[in-house]
Length: 240
Figure 1 (tube, rainbow, N blue to C red):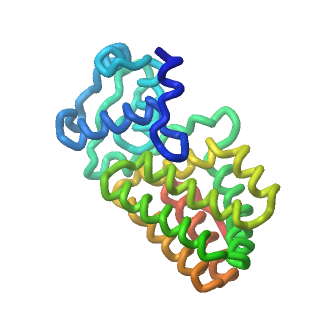
Figure 2 (figure 1 turned 120 degrees about the vertical axis):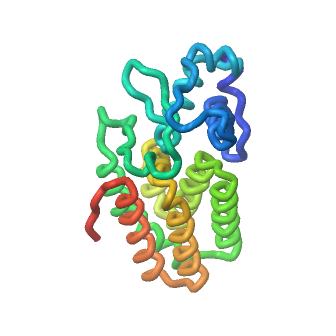
């Protein structure tokens, strides 16, 4: 079963796996009220059987749902649906890379790298690159409207990845690629604060405006503030 699932990619960026489809299915059940706040989800074995997927895919999907603030997984117990009116906003999400580094490490790296990348990108921004960033932001906004927070996180990453590539610094790009999974995870974390969902998209819009105005200094400053505010949304304090 796992061999079939690994090849099941649905998004254009090649990142959507079966676990992501499970996330969408369970999130839709929560949104429709089929899984109510406070209720326990079926066991991993039951979900795997019901959805015709592997338990490892279910486990990954539940981890993603926890990061996005939809469920809470307590050790030795089944996942519990969270109250979307505010309970998820109060929780500090588990960080799956805790054995290597913490979220602050990732945001510190991004704070060093991405404002400089934005400055360099603004200096050489071409119309086709602006169009690509505009389309990426539009897709991110559509995903938020549709409640597909996982897709929004991927578009968030893609927006930043495009900027790093446009900087022209190949080492920046390599560092970003090498840390793709952890950076993407850092971009999922703020989305668990459901009352602040639109803040990342609004900040992206301001960065895009700086690119449209060919304003390197403005792009660098706005990217710096975006990283600082993103960190704040998950309880990480950064200084410029």
